[in-house]
Length: 307
Image (cartoon, rainbow, N blue to C red; front, side):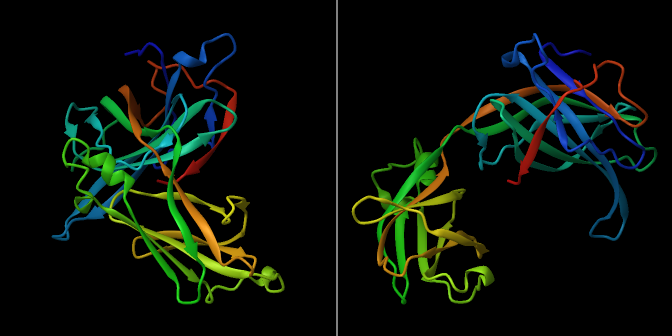
């Protein structure tokens, strides 16, 4: 069972398989990086659970790393995986949980996605290996886009600005008459003075700490803020805190006290393309499956970015 153009690397122990914090090199010397896709098993975990009736059952959590050529980042769209998992006895196992998270591959034009699959194990024997078939399906956002909230006053009583949610526009195309803005979702930004959080090392730094919170009922997810003054000149206040509360995501920044009005732009993930990677591999306990070559010796650093 070999897949042209896809290299697979697996290793494990009886209770927990743990790969190193590094990723395999994607383009060994003399090979075309553009044709290489790697799927690597990072870990296997076996756990006991209880159902709502108090009965015990067992699960296996498989953590796989997929690395493929391209640019961009894992998008926020929900992505149901087209996968089946079969045990060594031929029994198809129920997938009860799937999670995706993105990670970066340093200094490479590559996209990395971690896939966590949880399957329910048979009540009798633990399978000697697991076979995965089907397709990994990933939403990949190519770039960050900007939602301009316009001029906002920094005042003690706070400011609230509402904008049409660009993600709801994207999702509504072909479903809604997007001219009817009232049918589309909103992104709400609240700007308040942050008096509660103290920054010890900035106690003697002049300025005012302002909190920018963004709220949305869709998958709109702010990745950062850009600020300009009334003349269009870029302002770079000092970031102080990150915030998450009641569905809101934001940051606080220390502004010069002379700044009373600021143009606020929010960076967010743009339109996604759907990436499909065929899956046809076995993972198990006892050693590397003989059908597949080992991962290349050289590795590139990878830092996880949680979805």
